[in-house]
Image (cartoon, rainbow, N blue to C red; front, side, top):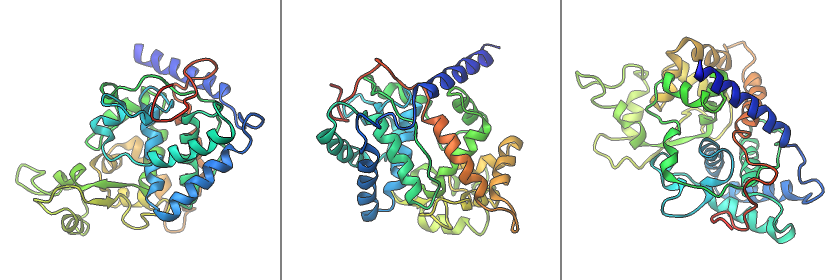
Amino acid sequence: MDAILGSLMILLISSAVQAQLKTGFYSTSCPNVEAIVRSTVVSHFNKDLTIAPGLLRLHFHDCFVEGCDGSILIADSSAEKNALPNFGLRGFEVIDDAKSQVEAICPGIVSCADILALAARDAVDLSDGPNWSVPTGRRDGRISLSSRASNLPSPLDSVSVQRQKFAAKGLDDHDLVTLVGAHTIGQAHCRFFSYRLYNFTTSGGADPTINVAFLPQLQALCPKNGDGLRKVALDKDSPAKFDVSFFKNVRDGNGVLESDQRLWEDSATQSVVQNYAGNIRGLLGLRFDFEFPKAMIKLSSIEVKTGTDGEIRKVCSKVN
């Protein structure tokens, strides 16, 4: 009962917060902010397409700890970004670049948290995904501690653990599967899934849920005694395109991360995966393109600071 009440409270709070955030929050105070952020993301994306999933993951990890308040951007030995689940996070330089350009024309107006939310949207759009209006008005947090990052989803999580972590943020099964769909442009280091390829079962075999045709491909990319640092696409078919092929891969046993593949084994999450994967003649991708922005707006409204809470950082990597 307490858990239900807690979830209800979070839902009520997030609805109230969504009302506090608004599209075009900077329309008079800094009208060019979205154009500046977009051109910055474009220039980095043109040099390296993989910056897109980097920015999306950065925003997601920011929102899960202390809410979407730019706390992930703070550089300090005990800061959030140094927690183990944040290993390999990237895109910090894109946010710093955009922030310095915004500060030059609108000093002290635009938060780092909002710049990150806008950049994540632009990253999806540039990867042939949907575009949407991002409600803004977030303020930057002053607390960033690696010790608070333990609630971040892990590639080892069962569906019930994933469900618990998302529900604690007011996100349901549908949001969970939809947001994990961001892995359509993601990558992961071998170290996060190579345990599935060798000695996974008591008899020394691989994870039986891996498609037998896909297994040797993964083993070739991540050899048994490798250093685990090689990056592998989480969507083997169209790794740089924001589409539904990730869901087809999960359906067919071609999920790379254990947490992704497990979504096919739970009836509630499986039905969402199946919906997005579609069939040969179905409307492929249209539904996902419509649902992903809704889930992102919900995610980017988690526990935000607005009004006089927090601050507007001058430099994203340190509190004022």
